[in-house]
Image 1 (cartoon, rainbow, N blue to C red):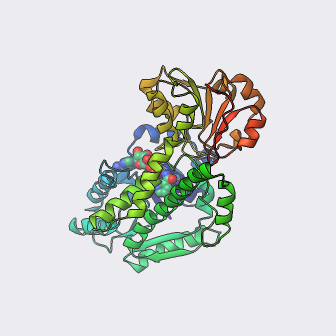
Image 2 (tube, helix red, strand yellow):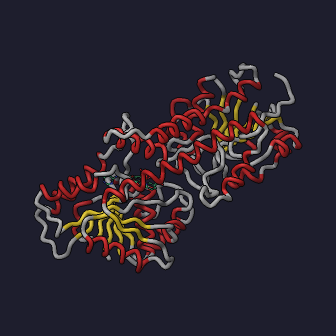
Image 3 (cartoon, rainbow, N blue to C red):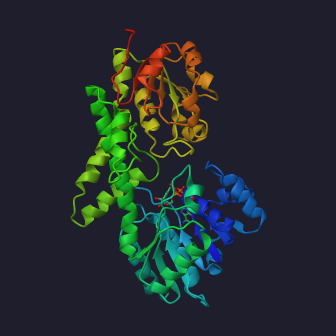
Length: 450
Ligand code: NAD
């Protein structure tokens, strides 16, 4: 099967590569020519475990190619997956301008094309409910009949950091559309490719589109809920880890997404919660739970810095604060909407000096804080980030932070104050190593006085 992926970001590049790995002929297209040139040489523009090796393997077996020429790429493709970004606009609604650009090119190159076989246009990008119908109408208006091109929605549920595993072992595949034959063709494509048995849910366009937003908003809500509970545990002596366990053992609740932290981030949850609220507003429906989720999350990112400021009696200027972990979660270099960014901004505003360490995300961080170059030190080792700091804040639970040499770090720091926003450690462990500390969900243990 000839497959075209438009957009070589996390979704398009990973899914395209995995489809190639399954024996399909895949062309990945992007309007960023520099990116395409790098990809042709096997250089991968972001970090995702196992991706680089798979790309090189499939380039070498001639199953995976790259192009910046969308018109040519779609002419020879049976399946055209759209996987371009749909970021949020200032008003919270989804910005569909990249999708519009892609459609413009597709329409102008297919308008006078002689079709021998119906093409499938499959939206993998997360788009507001109603988008698929609008795309089908646009094709019709431009003289491209649904016999020649069928519009399908196939929302993507992969998780950055384990995206390859998720592609090959999905929990469900959702296909929305109006044309039963077209739905069936995509269904068969998945069934023949995936060895793992997985429910394939076929439905209409609207349901498929909305299901992606509701899934993400529900997960975000779980996170905001447990974060509020952990703030209550901090004040009452209840054990947040034990509460998460007790709740999670209830099958109706489920154990995932019940870990407290500095709020959700990434390229999906924040924008998808906003877009769901926006699309509901347009339909005169108020998404009150989603709104609460969003405002809890906004507060949660920096709420615990108050312990640091209290510790120093608000005399924080010129203190050196080390940040362990920048990416919005482990195993990715993606820092879009990462809580660490808000934490760093808050600290910079208070005139702190910042040291940062992350195994993969430092180069992305440099692009965001270009103007603060003198106040941020980008460290290459754990020793560097710890040395002479007045506090360390653990913001992302990379595995390497689970095995810190706490005695060494204690001795390297100027003031051994450890703030753990991911519950990698407990106050019991940290105090045993001589730290003053705050671990999310527990009251702070501050033995020194400043
Ligand atoms: P991304 O920002 O990483 O990549 C988007 C790519 O599209 C970029 O390489 C960009 O250059 C390219 N592009 C933009 N306009 C283009 C055009 N006109 N022609 C060709 N290429 C163009 O985005 P992403 O994280 O891969 O997300 C893509 C979509 O998938 C979004 O709608 C997102 O919400 C959804 N999604 C993302 C994830 C995730 O974990 N990242 C998971 C599920 C769904």
